[in-house]
Image (cartoon, one colour):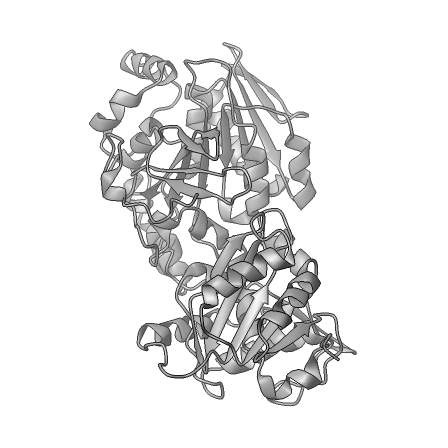
Length: 517
């Protein structure tokens, strides 16, 4: 079941456009929020929202909320204030412990002597028994330290510093046994400064991704769930849905923007405003306005420059797919299980079509995946079909070449030896993996490249720009797919299918290992 193309105008929820109206949000209040508002009217709270965006966030019924986007919007105060005022057991996370210092200082200012701090355990216990815990997940496996530890508020400060897998794993224990207590996840942060944080734009795609087919307004709810055997799917409402006999309960998600001009503490602070205005682009647009479309600052060891991909995507929008020519190259990146996708990418000369992908659970073996590939290709026979033979890839290859007798089907061994050098002839490649990535880099070069056109979307951008390289005595080495996955929290399946489709026929026999003999 795939509901990604649902007509959203027909949602069955009473929230159909914007939910950032405070009056509209009042109907969804839980007893925990009503209690807070009663105490607020009696001036008995430690913290109250200082801006409209903070009130919208506090009253939002969303199970999963991203707040902020720009600097100075009151993100830290929101997390601490909601933790101590509206939740029984809360946890606030930063990626590394030193970055918790300012948050813990602000918590001391707000709580004062109305709670007890255990500095050893990074834990506050309030007079009424509620708790606020601080944590960090510096390394990927540190997420396991939070396994089985429930909190009715899981809060992630500077969310783009976390990997997707850390965020999802820790959020899995967002729960409460009190029916009057709201359980939710809140993330705060600014636009990602490198491609590693690009997953945030995809996760909150309707609000942050300008290419999303069904954009959402700030505060508008969307609903998501992951049915058994599938990847995350968007549903048309929060009502229970039956998928292959299983009752699915989608969770709601939203984004509420906030910037320095929303914060009364900084409204007249021209010093802080001048600091943000003096930042170089793209940081200026990111921090001052929360512009998620601004180019991220690339890592100096990023193989493919971000701007080169953006230029290629701009060319795609100005062109039509060439007519009357066969598919010049097809790349197939089989899934390796989990949340990975099996992906198909087609190239028509220097025009790359929109990739097709399937959840890994659907592409469980070679014959199954090739059946879906054949359906996607229809009556088109590519000139060359390049298949990554890692994992189940060898089974995919075995199934592919009898099906496409007129196509050169090539088994690509990423670990195989390469004789390729970059365009300048300065760098040799350590293996086929390095060659494929560097061929894509050379093809994207805006001056000396092949004037290629790439399909739009942050996923294409993030995947192609995720890989980093080192220069060794044996040649250029690209980090492994597993290393990229550990760093960015997902597998760059779409990007690797595209670079496979870019492998030209004229050099295939020299640079790949083919099992056809």
